Image (tube, rainbow, N blue to C red; front, side, top):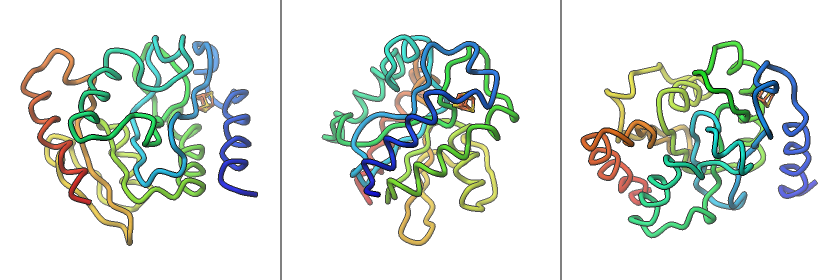
Length: 184
Ligand code: SF4
């Protein structure tokens, strides 16, 4: 089965998933959007309210920031693949149980899409990707802007755009850190 078919098959499973209680608060499960042939995969935390209504990742206020950050490095949102650790909306922060129920979907996406550059936005994405690749987990404040290699895969740790919404210092850091994606 080719990449396109495999990802569509996985998307179908995610759409009807009830493995954690997030299925009760979602409008729609969102597996991810964008180019499955891109070498870049951007990973966030979970869909927000607007994403849940529109059925697309990063379309709310954080999405506007992410779009602007991508534009500044001459990348269009549709050129990269964007997903989240959790595929369903809930107004509260992710729980360990929810993450352990959902993380296998991300692992499958990594297996199918085989990105070369993983852009991890925020602590949840960083922690889970570090766990998958057996790196010791570190605070995002210590590792933002740094990159890590796992064979041919590069992992870059960044703050989540939502954190920059009301914090101009974080936005400045994020803009500076984001440019490092171009170094790969
Ligand atoms: S968050 Fe993940 S595990 Fe939970 S219901 Fe949605 S798709 Fe399933």
